[in-house]
Image (cartoon, rainbow, N blue to C red; front, side):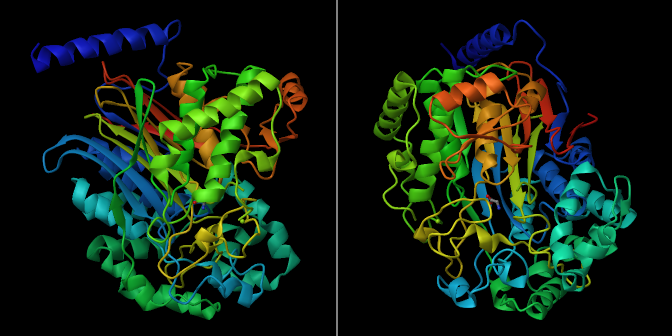
Length: 582
Ligand code: GLY
Protein backbone atom coordinates (compact mmCIF):
# COMPACT_ATOMS: atom_id res chain seq x y z
CA UNK A 1 0.00 0.00 0.00
CA UNK A 2 1.50 3.34 -0.87
CA UNK A 3 2.13 5.86 1.91
CA UNK A 4 -0.59 8.30 0.86
CA UNK A 5 -3.29 5.59 0.83
CA UNK A 6 -2.21 4.13 4.16
CA UNK A 7 -2.23 7.62 5.70
CA UNK A 8 -5.69 8.34 4.29
CA UNK A 9 -6.95 5.03 5.71
CA UNK A 10 -5.39 5.79 9.07
CA UNK A 11 -7.09 9.19 9.13
CA UNK A 12 -10.45 7.61 8.26
CA UNK A 13 -10.00 5.14 11.13
CA UNK A 14 -9.07 7.91 13.58
CA UNK A 15 -11.99 9.99 12.34
CA UNK A 16 -14.35 7.05 12.84
CA UNK A 17 -12.93 6.45 16.30
CA UNK A 18 -13.20 10.09 17.31
CA UNK A 19 -16.70 10.25 15.86
CA UNK A 20 -17.68 7.23 17.96
CA UNK A 21 -16.07 8.73 21.04
CA UNK A 22 -17.72 12.10 20.49
CA UNK A 23 -21.23 10.69 20.46
CA UNK A 24 -23.70 11.63 21.75
CA UNK A 25 -22.97 15.35 22.04
CA UNK A 26 -21.06 17.96 20.09
CA UNK A 27 -17.44 18.23 21.11
CA UNK A 28 -16.58 21.84 20.53
CA UNK A 29 -16.93 24.77 22.88
CA UNK A 30 -14.68 26.94 20.77
CA UNK A 31 -13.80 25.61 17.40
CA UNK A 32 -12.31 26.69 14.17
CA UNK A 33 -11.14 24.74 11.20
CA UNK A 34 -8.63 27.11 9.73
CA UNK A 35 -7.28 29.68 12.06
CA UNK A 36 -5.80 28.43 15.30
CA UNK A 37 -6.63 28.91 18.95
CA UNK A 38 -4.87 30.33 22.01
CA UNK A 39 -5.92 29.57 25.59
CA UNK A 40 -4.36 31.63 28.37
CA UNK A 41 -5.31 32.53 31.91
CA UNK A 42 -6.08 36.14 30.95
CA UNK A 43 -8.30 37.06 27.95
CA UNK A 44 -6.06 39.96 26.84
CA UNK A 45 -3.08 37.62 26.69
CA UNK A 46 -5.01 35.05 24.63
CA UNK A 47 -6.01 37.88 22.27
CA UNK A 48 -2.36 38.97 21.95
CA UNK A 49 -1.49 35.45 20.81
CA UNK A 50 -4.42 35.23 18.40
CA UNK A 51 -3.32 38.57 16.91
CA UNK A 52 -0.06 36.85 15.89
CA UNK A 53 -1.94 33.94 14.31
CA UNK A 54 -4.12 36.41 12.40
CA UNK A 55 -0.95 38.18 11.20
CA UNK A 56 0.23 34.88 9.68
CA UNK A 57 2.43 33.81 12.59
CA UNK A 58 2.73 30.27 13.86
CA UNK A 59 2.05 28.73 17.28
CA UNK A 60 5.46 29.82 18.60
CA UNK A 61 4.89 33.48 17.63
CA UNK A 62 1.50 33.28 19.35
CA UNK A 63 2.90 31.69 22.52
CA UNK A 64 5.66 34.30 22.80
CA UNK A 65 3.24 37.23 22.34
CA UNK A 66 0.86 35.64 24.86
CA UNK A 67 3.64 35.19 27.39
CA UNK A 68 4.80 38.81 27.01
CA UNK A 69 1.23 40.05 27.49
CA UNK A 70 0.85 37.82 30.57
CA UNK A 71 3.94 39.49 32.02
CA UNK A 72 1.84 42.68 32.07
CA UNK A 73 -1.65 41.43 32.95
CA UNK A 74 -0.67 38.59 35.32
CA UNK A 75 2.19 40.26 37.22
CA UNK A 76 1.37 38.07 40.20
CA UNK A 77 1.88 34.85 38.26
CA UNK A 78 4.63 35.04 35.68
CA UNK A 79 6.58 37.50 33.60
CA UNK A 80 9.98 38.61 32.45
CA UNK A 81 11.30 38.39 36.02
CA UNK A 82 10.61 34.64 36.11
CA UNK A 83 11.20 31.46 34.14
CA UNK A 84 9.40 28.61 32.44
CA UNK A 85 9.22 25.58 30.21
CA UNK A 86 8.01 25.43 26.61
CA UNK A 87 7.19 22.33 24.55
CA UNK A 88 7.05 22.85 20.80
CA UNK A 89 5.70 20.49 18.16
CA UNK A 90 5.99 21.74 14.56
CA UNK A 91 4.84 19.76 11.55
CA UNK A 92 7.06 19.88 8.54
CA UNK A 93 8.46 23.32 9.35
CA UNK A 94 10.10 24.84 6.22
CA UNK A 95 13.38 25.47 8.12
CA UNK A 96 13.59 22.55 10.54
CA UNK A 97 11.23 19.82 9.27
CA UNK A 98 9.31 18.09 12.06
CA UNK A 99 10.25 19.61 15.41
CA UNK A 100 9.60 18.10 18.83
CA UNK A 101 11.57 19.97 21.46
CA UNK A 102 11.50 21.22 25.03
CA UNK A 103 12.98 24.59 25.98
CA UNK A 104 14.07 24.83 29.61
CA UNK A 105 14.28 28.45 30.72
CA UNK A 106 13.86 27.75 34.40
CA UNK A 107 15.63 30.24 36.68
CA UNK A 108 19.06 29.29 38.03
CA UNK A 109 20.66 29.62 41.44
CA UNK A 110 23.00 32.67 41.67
CA UNK A 111 26.72 31.97 42.19
CA UNK A 112 26.54 33.50 45.67
CA UNK A 113 24.15 30.88 47.07
CA UNK A 114 25.12 27.31 48.01
CA UNK A 115 23.56 24.33 49.82
CA UNK A 116 24.15 25.84 53.30
CA UNK A 117 23.35 29.48 52.55
CA UNK A 118 19.73 29.57 53.73
CA UNK A 119 20.61 27.75 56.96
CA UNK A 120 23.37 30.32 57.53
CA UNK A 121 21.04 33.25 56.85
CA UNK A 122 18.72 31.67 59.43
CA UNK A 123 15.77 33.71 58.19
CA UNK A 124 12.67 31.63 57.38
CA UNK A 125 11.50 34.37 55.03
CA UNK A 126 14.73 34.57 53.01
CA UNK A 127 13.73 32.07 50.29
CA UNK A 128 10.16 33.39 50.02
CA UNK A 129 10.06 37.19 50.11
CA UNK A 130 12.72 39.80 49.36
CA UNK A 131 15.78 39.80 47.15
CA UNK A 132 17.46 36.74 48.69
CA UNK A 133 14.66 34.66 47.18
CA UNK A 134 15.47 35.78 43.62
CA UNK A 135 16.90 33.26 41.16
CA UNK A 136 18.39 34.32 37.80
CA UNK A 137 15.40 34.95 35.49
CA UNK A 138 15.14 32.86 32.31
CA UNK A 139 11.94 33.99 30.60
CA UNK A 140 13.41 36.50 28.16
CA UNK A 141 16.25 34.12 27.15
CA UNK A 142 13.70 31.35 26.56
CA UNK A 143 11.20 33.45 24.64
CA UNK A 144 13.86 35.06 22.42
CA UNK A 145 15.39 31.65 21.65
CA UNK A 146 11.97 30.22 20.76
CA UNK A 147 11.06 33.23 18.60
CA UNK A 148 14.36 33.44 16.75
CA UNK A 149 14.65 29.71 16.06
CA UNK A 150 11.05 28.55 15.67
CA UNK A 151 8.93 31.68 15.22
CA UNK A 152 8.29 33.52 11.98
CA UNK A 153 7.47 37.10 13.00
CA UNK A 154 9.82 39.90 14.03
CA UNK A 155 10.29 41.16 17.59
CA UNK A 156 8.52 44.44 16.94
CA UNK A 157 5.33 42.64 15.91
CA UNK A 158 5.42 40.08 18.72
CA UNK A 159 6.13 42.62 21.49
CA UNK A 160 3.54 45.16 20.25
CA UNK A 161 0.44 43.87 22.11
CA UNK A 162 2.23 43.62 25.47
CA UNK A 163 3.70 47.11 25.12
CA UNK A 164 0.28 48.48 24.14
CA UNK A 165 -1.39 46.92 27.21
CA UNK A 166 1.39 48.01 29.58
CA UNK A 167 1.11 51.60 28.36
CA UNK A 168 -2.69 51.76 28.11
CA UNK A 169 -3.37 49.81 31.29
CA UNK A 170 -5.73 46.94 32.01
CA UNK A 171 -8.60 46.32 34.40
CA UNK A 172 -7.90 44.36 37.56
CA UNK A 173 -10.02 41.20 37.46
CA UNK A 174 -11.26 38.90 40.22
CA UNK A 175 -8.12 36.81 40.20
CA UNK A 176 -5.95 39.92 40.61
CA UNK A 177 -8.10 41.12 43.52
CA UNK A 178 -8.10 37.71 45.20
CA UNK A 179 -4.30 37.61 44.97
CA UNK A 180 -3.93 41.19 46.25
CA UNK A 181 -6.25 40.43 49.17
CA UNK A 182 -4.26 37.31 50.04
CA UNK A 183 -1.26 39.59 50.70
CA UNK A 184 -3.09 42.18 52.84
CA UNK A 185 -2.22 40.41 56.10
CA UNK A 186 1.45 40.30 55.09
CA UNK A 187 1.54 44.07 54.50
CA UNK A 188 -0.53 44.82 57.63
CA UNK A 189 1.61 42.64 59.94
CA UNK A 190 4.65 44.80 59.22
CA UNK A 191 3.81 48.09 57.54
CA UNK A 192 7.48 48.80 56.71
CA UNK A 193 6.94 46.23 53.95
CA UNK A 194 4.83 48.84 52.12
CA UNK A 195 7.94 50.97 51.59
CA UNK A 196 10.16 47.97 51.00
CA UNK A 197 7.98 46.65 48.13
CA UNK A 198 6.48 49.89 46.76
CA UNK A 199 5.53 48.69 43.25
CA UNK A 200 3.50 45.77 44.58
CA UNK A 201 1.89 47.79 47.38
CA UNK A 202 1.25 51.10 45.56
CA UNK A 203 0.81 50.08 41.97
CA UNK A 204 -0.44 46.49 41.93
CA UNK A 205 -2.47 46.60 45.17
CA UNK A 206 -3.40 50.33 45.09
CA UNK A 207 -2.34 50.56 48.76
CA UNK A 208 -4.66 47.73 49.68
CA UNK A 209 -7.71 49.34 48.08
CA UNK A 210 -7.71 47.76 44.64
CA UNK A 211 -11.11 46.59 43.39
CA UNK A 212 -12.37 44.76 40.34
CA UNK A 213 -12.33 47.14 37.37
CA UNK A 214 -9.61 49.46 38.71
CA UNK A 215 -7.08 50.24 36.01
CA UNK A 216 -3.48 49.17 36.43
CA UNK A 217 -0.86 50.97 34.31
CA UNK A 218 2.67 49.64 33.94
CA UNK A 219 4.48 52.18 31.69
CA UNK A 220 7.83 51.22 33.23
CA UNK A 221 7.35 47.62 32.10
CA UNK A 222 6.44 48.97 28.64
CA UNK A 223 9.90 50.60 28.60
CA UNK A 224 11.59 47.32 29.48
CA UNK A 225 9.64 45.47 26.78
CA UNK A 226 10.45 48.22 24.23
CA UNK A 227 14.18 47.93 25.00
CA UNK A 228 14.09 44.14 24.57
CA UNK A 229 12.06 44.48 21.35
CA UNK A 230 14.75 46.83 20.00
CA UNK A 231 17.92 45.12 21.25
CA UNK A 232 16.95 41.53 22.00
CA UNK A 233 17.81 39.48 25.09
CA UNK A 234 21.07 41.44 25.61
CA UNK A 235 19.05 44.43 26.82
CA UNK A 236 17.84 42.25 29.68
CA UNK A 237 20.96 40.22 30.51
CA UNK A 238 23.71 42.79 29.82
CA UNK A 239 22.18 46.20 29.23
CA UNK A 240 20.26 48.77 31.25
CA UNK A 241 17.71 46.28 32.53
CA UNK A 242 20.50 44.08 33.92
CA UNK A 243 21.93 47.11 35.74
CA UNK A 244 18.54 47.87 37.26
CA UNK A 245 17.94 44.22 38.28
CA UNK A 246 21.28 44.01 40.07
CA UNK A 247 20.79 47.39 41.76
CA UNK A 248 17.27 46.48 42.94
CA UNK A 249 18.37 43.09 44.29
CA UNK A 250 21.43 44.54 46.02
CA UNK A 251 19.36 47.33 47.60
CA UNK A 252 17.24 44.67 49.30
CA UNK A 253 20.19 42.57 50.50
CA UNK A 254 20.28 39.98 47.70
CA UNK A 255 23.34 38.46 46.03
CA UNK A 256 22.51 38.28 42.31
CA UNK A 257 25.28 39.77 40.11
CA UNK A 258 25.88 40.97 36.55
CA UNK A 259 27.84 37.76 35.97
CA UNK A 260 24.85 35.65 37.04
CA UNK A 261 22.72 37.42 34.45
CA UNK A 262 25.31 37.47 31.65
CA UNK A 263 26.03 33.75 32.04
CA UNK A 264 22.39 32.62 32.01
CA UNK A 265 21.72 30.02 29.27
CA UNK A 266 18.58 28.21 28.21
CA UNK A 267 18.66 24.47 27.56
CA UNK A 268 17.00 22.90 24.56
CA UNK A 269 16.28 19.22 25.12
CA UNK A 270 14.12 16.38 23.90
CA UNK A 271 10.76 16.06 25.63
CA UNK A 272 9.87 12.96 27.62
CA UNK A 273 8.02 10.71 25.16
CA UNK A 274 5.70 8.12 26.69
CA UNK A 275 3.04 5.99 24.98
CA UNK A 276 -0.23 5.54 26.87
CA UNK A 277 -2.61 3.25 25.01
CA UNK A 278 -3.16 4.78 21.60
CA UNK A 279 -1.76 8.17 22.63
CA UNK A 280 1.78 9.50 22.78
CA UNK A 281 2.52 12.04 25.47
CA UNK A 282 5.17 14.72 24.99
CA UNK A 283 6.10 16.02 28.40
CA UNK A 284 8.71 18.21 30.05
CA UNK A 285 11.82 16.40 31.34
CA UNK A 286 13.43 17.27 34.72
CA UNK A 287 13.89 19.70 36.39
CA UNK A 288 10.15 19.51 35.74
CA UNK A 289 8.79 16.77 37.94
CA UNK A 290 5.44 17.24 36.26
CA UNK A 291 6.24 15.62 32.92
CA UNK A 292 7.13 12.26 34.44
CA UNK A 293 4.38 12.48 37.08
CA UNK A 294 1.60 13.27 34.55
CA UNK A 295 2.86 10.39 32.36
CA UNK A 296 2.85 8.05 35.39
CA UNK A 297 -0.70 9.01 36.43
CA UNK A 298 -2.10 8.67 32.90
CA UNK A 299 -0.28 5.39 32.32
CA UNK A 300 -1.47 3.87 35.62
CA UNK A 301 -5.05 5.01 34.94
CA UNK A 302 -4.86 3.29 31.54
CA UNK A 303 -3.38 0.04 32.93
CA UNK A 304 -5.98 -0.17 35.69
CA UNK A 305 -8.93 0.90 33.51
CA UNK A 306 -9.60 3.86 35.79
CA UNK A 307 -12.02 5.74 33.56
CA UNK A 308 -12.95 9.25 34.58
CA UNK A 309 -16.19 10.69 33.16
CA UNK A 310 -16.51 13.87 31.11
CA UNK A 311 -18.20 15.71 33.97
CA UNK A 312 -18.89 15.22 37.67
CA UNK A 313 -17.02 13.12 40.21
CA UNK A 314 -15.53 9.76 39.30
CA UNK A 315 -16.82 6.56 40.91
CA UNK A 316 -15.29 5.84 44.35
CA UNK A 317 -12.98 3.06 43.17
CA UNK A 318 -11.76 5.23 40.27
CA UNK A 319 -11.13 8.19 42.59
CA UNK A 320 -9.28 5.89 45.01
CA UNK A 321 -7.15 4.40 42.20
CA UNK A 322 -6.29 7.84 40.80
CA UNK A 323 -5.45 9.16 44.28
CA UNK A 324 -3.13 6.14 44.72
CA UNK A 325 -1.45 6.91 41.37
CA UNK A 326 -0.94 10.51 42.54
CA UNK A 327 0.57 9.34 45.85
CA UNK A 328 3.05 7.05 44.07
CA UNK A 329 3.97 9.79 41.57
CA UNK A 330 4.61 12.36 44.33
CA UNK A 331 6.62 9.88 46.45
CA UNK A 332 8.78 9.20 43.36
CA UNK A 333 9.08 12.95 42.85
CA UNK A 334 10.40 13.44 46.39
CA UNK A 335 12.82 10.55 46.07
CA UNK A 336 14.32 11.00 42.62
CA UNK A 337 13.72 14.42 41.16
CA UNK A 338 16.15 17.34 40.81
CA UNK A 339 18.08 19.17 38.09
CA UNK A 340 19.58 16.43 35.85
CA UNK A 341 22.57 18.67 35.12
CA UNK A 342 23.61 18.08 38.76
CA UNK A 343 22.10 14.70 39.71
CA UNK A 344 21.14 11.56 37.83
CA UNK A 345 17.37 11.42 37.51
CA UNK A 346 16.26 7.92 36.40
CA UNK A 347 13.48 9.07 34.04
CA UNK A 348 13.71 6.01 31.80
CA UNK A 349 13.56 3.61 34.75
CA UNK A 350 10.64 5.46 36.32
CA UNK A 351 8.64 5.18 33.09
CA UNK A 352 9.84 1.68 32.15
CA UNK A 353 7.50 -1.31 32.09
CA UNK A 354 8.78 -3.02 35.31
CA UNK A 355 8.35 0.10 37.46
CA UNK A 356 4.89 0.93 36.10
CA UNK A 357 3.74 -2.71 36.27
CA UNK A 358 4.95 -2.92 39.89
CA UNK A 359 3.12 0.28 40.85
CA UNK A 360 -0.02 -0.81 38.99
CA UNK A 361 0.15 -4.10 40.97
CA UNK A 362 0.40 -2.19 44.25
CA UNK A 363 -2.57 0.02 43.32
CA UNK A 364 -4.52 -3.08 42.23
CA UNK A 365 -3.96 -4.57 45.71
CA UNK A 366 -5.02 -1.32 47.34
CA UNK A 367 -8.20 -1.36 45.20
CA UNK A 368 -8.89 -4.99 46.17
CA UNK A 369 -8.39 -4.24 49.86
CA UNK A 370 -10.31 -0.96 49.62
CA UNK A 371 -7.61 0.74 51.72
CA UNK A 372 -4.96 3.38 51.11
CA UNK A 373 -1.48 2.91 52.61
CA UNK A 374 0.64 4.85 55.08
CA UNK A 375 3.03 7.42 53.54
CA UNK A 376 6.02 5.14 54.22
CA UNK A 377 4.51 2.38 52.08
CA UNK A 378 4.96 4.39 48.85
CA UNK A 379 8.57 3.41 48.46
CA UNK A 380 10.40 6.45 49.73
CA UNK A 381 13.86 5.54 51.08
CA UNK A 382 14.16 8.34 53.62
CA UNK A 383 12.28 11.60 54.04
CA UNK A 384 14.51 13.92 52.05
CA UNK A 385 12.13 17.99 51.97
CA UNK A 386 -1.00 28.66 46.76
CA UNK A 387 -1.92 29.05 43.48
CA UNK A 388 -0.92 32.41 42.13
CA UNK A 389 2.55 32.56 40.74
CA UNK A 390 2.28 30.42 37.64
CA UNK A 391 0.51 30.63 34.28
CA UNK A 392 -0.08 28.17 31.45
CA UNK A 393 -0.54 28.89 27.71
CA UNK A 394 -1.84 26.37 25.16
CA UNK A 395 -1.69 27.13 21.43
CA UNK A 396 -2.53 25.13 18.30
CA UNK A 397 -2.21 26.89 14.96
CA UNK A 398 -3.79 26.32 11.56
CA UNK A 399 -1.02 23.90 10.59
CA UNK A 400 -1.60 21.66 13.61
CA UNK A 401 1.59 22.97 15.27
CA UNK A 402 1.31 23.13 19.03
CA UNK A 403 2.95 24.90 21.95
CA UNK A 404 2.44 24.10 25.62
CA UNK A 405 4.15 26.69 27.77
CA UNK A 406 4.08 27.11 31.54
CA UNK A 407 5.81 30.04 33.23
CA UNK A 408 6.16 31.19 36.80
CA UNK A 409 7.54 33.69 39.27
CA UNK A 410 6.61 31.16 42.02
CA UNK A 411 4.43 32.73 44.77
CA UNK A 412 2.04 35.69 44.31
CA UNK A 413 4.05 38.61 42.85
CA UNK A 414 7.19 36.46 43.34
CA UNK A 415 9.74 37.94 45.75
CA UNK A 416 7.70 41.21 45.84
CA UNK A 417 10.90 42.98 44.71
CA UNK A 418 10.21 44.97 41.55
CA UNK A 419 12.97 46.25 39.28
CA UNK A 420 13.54 49.97 39.80
CA UNK A 421 12.55 51.98 36.73
CA UNK A 422 11.16 48.93 34.88
CA UNK A 423 8.32 47.92 37.20
CA UNK A 424 8.30 44.12 36.85
CA UNK A 425 8.41 41.68 39.75
CA UNK A 426 11.35 39.37 40.29
CA UNK A 427 10.67 35.71 41.06
CA UNK A 428 11.12 33.93 44.39
CA UNK A 429 12.00 30.66 42.70
CA UNK A 430 14.75 29.91 45.24
CA UNK A 431 11.97 28.52 47.45
CA UNK A 432 11.49 25.66 44.97
CA UNK A 433 14.91 24.37 46.07
CA UNK A 434 15.26 22.31 49.25
CA UNK A 435 16.46 25.40 51.08
CA UNK A 436 16.58 23.75 54.52
CA UNK A 437 17.02 19.95 54.38
CA UNK A 438 14.00 18.06 55.71
CA UNK A 439 11.67 21.07 55.69
CA UNK A 440 8.72 21.43 53.34
CA UNK A 441 8.58 24.37 50.93
CA UNK A 442 5.74 26.91 50.61
CA UNK A 443 3.64 24.28 48.80
CA UNK A 444 4.11 21.74 51.61
CA UNK A 445 6.35 19.67 49.31
CA UNK A 446 9.05 17.51 50.81
CA UNK A 447 12.01 17.32 48.43
CA UNK A 448 15.36 15.52 48.50
CA UNK A 449 18.85 16.85 49.17
CA UNK A 450 19.51 16.40 45.45
CA UNK A 451 17.45 19.59 45.12
CA UNK A 452 19.64 21.68 47.46
CA UNK A 453 20.71 25.02 45.91
CA UNK A 454 24.03 25.08 44.04
CA UNK A 455 25.35 27.83 41.74
CA UNK A 456 23.86 27.46 38.26
CA UNK A 457 21.40 24.74 39.32
CA UNK A 458 17.69 24.88 38.46
CA UNK A 459 15.14 24.17 41.21
CA UNK A 460 12.71 21.29 40.87
CA UNK A 461 9.38 22.35 39.38
CA UNK A 462 5.87 20.95 39.14
CA UNK A 463 5.17 22.75 35.84
CA UNK A 464 3.76 20.21 33.40
CA UNK A 465 3.26 21.55 29.87
CA UNK A 466 2.00 18.56 27.88
CA UNK A 467 1.25 17.82 24.22
CA UNK A 468 -0.57 14.64 23.18
CA UNK A 469 -0.14 13.03 19.76
CA UNK A 470 -2.14 10.29 18.11
CA UNK A 471 -0.58 7.20 16.55
CA UNK A 472 0.17 9.14 13.37
CA UNK A 473 2.02 11.85 15.25
CA UNK A 474 -0.75 14.43 14.82
CA UNK A 475 -1.35 16.78 17.73
CA UNK A 476 -4.65 15.99 19.47
CA UNK A 477 -4.31 17.90 22.73
CA UNK A 478 -2.22 20.42 24.57
CA UNK A 479 -2.65 21.25 28.25
CA UNK A 480 -0.97 22.49 31.41
CA UNK A 481 -1.77 24.41 34.55
CA UNK A 482 -0.84 26.72 37.37
CA UNK A 483 -1.22 25.82 41.03
CA UNK A 484 2.07 24.55 42.52
CA UNK A 485 1.86 20.76 43.03
CA UNK A 486 -1.77 20.89 41.87
CA UNK A 487 -0.37 21.62 38.39
CA UNK A 488 0.43 17.92 38.05
CA UNK A 489 -2.86 16.54 39.32
CA UNK A 490 -5.10 19.06 37.54
CA UNK A 491 -3.31 18.61 34.19
CA UNK A 492 -3.60 14.82 34.52
CA UNK A 493 -7.33 14.95 35.33
CA UNK A 494 -8.15 17.29 32.43
CA UNK A 495 -6.27 15.03 30.01
CA UNK A 496 -7.97 11.94 31.45
CA UNK A 497 -11.40 13.51 31.02
CA UNK A 498 -10.61 14.62 27.47
CA UNK A 499 -8.86 11.47 26.27
CA UNK A 500 -10.88 8.80 28.11
CA UNK A 501 -14.16 10.53 28.87
CA UNK A 502 -14.45 12.38 25.54
CA UNK A 503 -15.13 15.58 27.42
CA UNK A 504 -15.17 18.85 25.54
CA UNK A 505 -12.34 21.15 26.58
CA UNK A 506 -14.78 23.21 28.63
CA UNK A 507 -16.17 20.13 30.38
CA UNK A 508 -12.71 18.73 31.08
CA UNK A 509 -11.39 22.01 32.48
CA UNK A 510 -14.49 22.92 34.50
CA UNK A 511 -15.20 19.56 36.13
CA UNK A 512 -14.39 19.20 39.85
CA UNK A 513 -10.99 17.82 40.80
CA UNK A 514 -9.21 15.88 43.52
CA UNK A 515 -5.60 16.28 44.64
CA UNK A 516 -3.15 14.13 46.60
CA UNK A 517 0.57 14.92 46.85
CA UNK A 518 1.61 12.03 49.14
CA UNK A 519 2.66 14.45 51.91
CA UNK A 520 0.75 16.00 53.56
CA UNK A 521 -1.17 12.72 53.61
CA UNK A 522 -4.56 14.17 52.64
CA UNK A 523 -6.93 13.78 49.71
CA UNK A 524 -8.39 17.18 48.79
CA UNK A 525 -11.68 17.79 46.97
CA UNK A 526 -12.85 20.96 45.31
CA UNK A 527 -16.15 22.26 46.65
CA UNK A 528 -18.92 21.46 46.35
CA UNK A 529 -17.41 18.49 48.14
CA UNK A 530 -19.21 15.35 47.12
CA UNK A 531 -20.14 14.00 50.53
CA UNK A 532 -20.80 10.42 49.37
CA UNK A 533 -17.47 10.34 47.50
CA UNK A 534 -15.52 11.90 50.41
CA UNK A 535 -17.18 9.42 52.77
CA UNK A 536 -16.27 6.54 50.43
CA UNK A 537 -12.66 7.77 50.43
CA UNK A 538 -12.58 8.00 54.22
CA UNK A 539 -13.81 4.40 54.36
CA UNK A 540 -10.76 3.53 52.24
CA UNK A 541 -8.47 5.13 54.84
CA UNK A 542 -7.93 8.57 53.27
CA UNK A 543 -7.92 11.74 55.34
CA UNK A 544 -9.98 14.17 53.28
CA UNK A 545 -10.16 17.94 53.00
CA UNK A 546 -11.50 20.64 50.70
CA UNK A 547 -9.60 23.19 48.70
CA UNK A 548 -11.30 26.09 46.93
CA UNK A 549 -9.43 25.64 43.65
CA UNK A 550 -7.26 22.74 42.50
CA UNK A 551 -5.12 24.18 39.71
CA UNK A 552 -6.08 26.37 36.75
CA UNK A 553 -5.78 24.55 33.42
CA UNK A 554 -5.73 25.78 29.83
CA UNK A 555 -6.40 23.01 27.29
CA UNK A 556 -7.02 22.71 23.55
CA UNK A 557 -8.25 19.48 21.93
CA UNK A 558 -7.87 18.93 18.19
CA UNK A 559 -9.67 16.57 15.89
CA UNK A 560 -6.89 15.42 13.53
CA UNK A 561 -9.37 14.44 10.83
CA UNK A 562 -10.96 17.87 10.49
CA UNK A 563 -8.48 20.16 12.22
CA UNK A 564 -11.33 21.37 14.44
CA UNK A 565 -10.08 22.94 17.65
CA UNK A 566 -11.85 22.98 20.98
CA UNK A 567 -10.23 25.09 23.67
CA UNK A 568 -10.95 26.22 27.19
CA UNK A 569 -9.37 28.50 29.76
CA UNK A 570 -10.03 27.65 33.37
CA UNK A 571 -13.00 29.55 34.85
CA UNK A 572 -11.24 29.26 38.24
CA UNK A 573 -8.80 31.97 37.12
CA UNK A 574 -10.89 33.91 34.60
CA UNK A 575 -8.83 33.09 31.54
CA UNK A 576 -9.77 33.42 27.89
CA UNK A 577 -9.67 31.59 24.58
CA UNK A 578 -9.02 33.61 21.42
CA UNK A 579 -9.06 32.48 17.83
CA UNK A 580 -7.23 33.68 14.77
CA UNK A 581 -9.23 35.70 12.30
CA UNK A 582 -8.06 33.66 9.37
N1 GLY B 1 7.02 27.56 41.09
C1 GLY B 1 6.14 26.51 40.86
C2 GLY B 1 6.76 25.39 40.14
O1 GLY B 1 7.67 25.60 39.35
O2 GLY B 1 6.38 24.26 40.37
